[in-house]
Length: 408
Image (cartoon, rainbow, N blue to C red; front, side):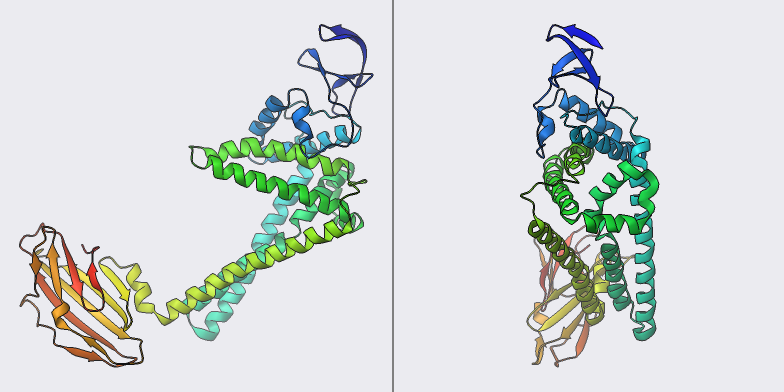
């Protein structure tokens, strides 16, 4: 094929792996009905694509295609493999942006989806078993949830732990064997035999994750920010991951086994710490709910509030009489969790209307008497207030609690 144009003399063209045409001297790329200069060949860096002809519109189109559910991900993976073929052949060229890569990317996408479903089912089964065993032993709903939920997340995390080091080897193996990547044992051996290459790919993916997180944080403040982040992030992932795939048989000499082991150890530590979080939350929440059932129930009850003081806890329930909205009833339960007796002073009972008028307890309820709450015991008192008008808003002041500004 001989052709020429304003930008280049007449040249002889040849096809590269993605089907595009380049000049015989590898200096020109035929794209958009014209010759465009190609960057010099050599080992590609992580951001090699920014020097290629038409990289921005090409990646944006691939990003738009990537937003299509399932098929978009398949296309992204196939595009990654085709890009790696170009790089492996020595051409720093992004393949044309279209939907022709779905079939090539389908095996890895289907394997990822299938494993995700299996991981979720395993996690649900483990959580169910632990939950049933806990309830059979303790008959405690808080502890059942507090142990079952962390178990679910732990099994899910363990099942997804290999995803990072397996990602690049799966794409590289899929390029050669297609659906053969479903031979999981062969895929695992492929990773262990190319340890440096697998973790070099993992390092690139982690770098992309950091960049993608930054983009998400920046764009989260605007409408449809997550979609815009995916539009930018997905094609960049394809271009970056193509580098470790292309160099799978020859990873950078500077990325030795020590670096690979360091990243692998760091990844393991990260997941261990991540798995500790749901356990800490679950155990802490179960302990609190089991030890403070009244306080927890109060959170979900309208007109109820509680406060913790040096003497212990006070739980107040404020209601208005349905037939007489000027009548407000306050029931307060004092729980002494301290080691000494705690006094309840009835002089601390009062109310305040929205206009600032101070109200003392009314005679609609028996006046609370001074009381002492012994350590480890509780006391319940009731007090009533009569509002000047049914439409009045109000606050109440109670022993141990003080003013509450959230009453009905």
